[in-house]
Amino acid sequence: MTLGHVIRKVKTEDRDAVSAVLTSAFESDGEARLVQNLWEQHAIRFERLAEVSGVIIGYCAFSAVTCKPDLDGLLLGLGPLAVAPEHQNQGVGGELVKEGLKLCRENNARLIAVLGDPDYYARFGFEPASKKKMTWAGFDAGDAFRIITNADEKFDDVNPDDIRTIHYHPAFNDVS
Ligand SMILES: CC(C)(COP(=O)(O)OP(=O)(O)OC[C@H]1O[C@@H](n2cnc3c(N)ncnc32)[C@H](O)[C@@H]1OP(=O)(O)O)[C@@H](O)C(=O)NCCC(=O)NCCS
Image (tube, rainbow, N blue to C red; front, side):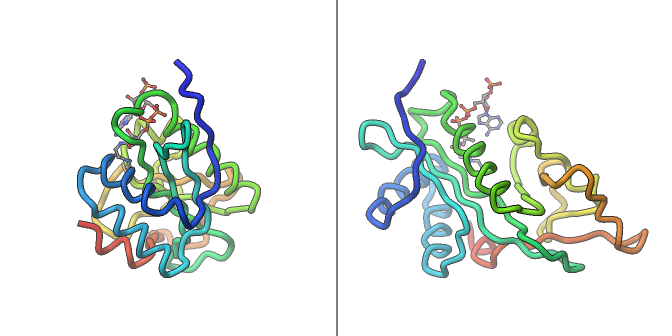
């Protein structure tokens, strides 16, 4: 079934509706407050929403991440990603991710990270971060922490026993 939706940029006047979509998808306002914080700190690098007949039904954001030991270039983290419950499983989330990844590629992102369901994100090309000796700075998320990088990049300039930790914007630490 086609919803007749569009994927488009987010305008200032969309913010309340985006917050409502986030709250409905996550069943709490933690992610809505996170996005509000990221907006206030101008920390979102790319974001897109999905709209059908003037109603906002989905949202995704990409913000800068940092790495220790350092890596230069554009390093991004995907999240949050949300589709309103009544519109889920109709391809909207996938389109938001694909459109966001296209923007990342057009801007020569060196790395895109995500923390989430491994099966869902594998379909977009996200691979376990451990394959390139990287991990999330939070808890050990195993395969749920994934990255997309240029296949040719080995990132093997760290000590054999060392592993790079990836840090999201501090606002992510406050999500409850
Ligand atoms: C995750 C989410 C954004 C997916 O959006 P969507 O529009 O429903 O997804 P799509 O229609 O593009 O893809 C549907 C497929 O993803 C799978 N899928 C959806 N949500 C999933 C999840 N949380 N974990 C694993 N797989 C999931 C479906 O089973 C379906 O699989 P299929 O194609 O093999 O049938 C949406 O379900 C959502 O907002 N969930 C609540 C918030 C959330 O968990 N966000 C992600 C945080 S990492």
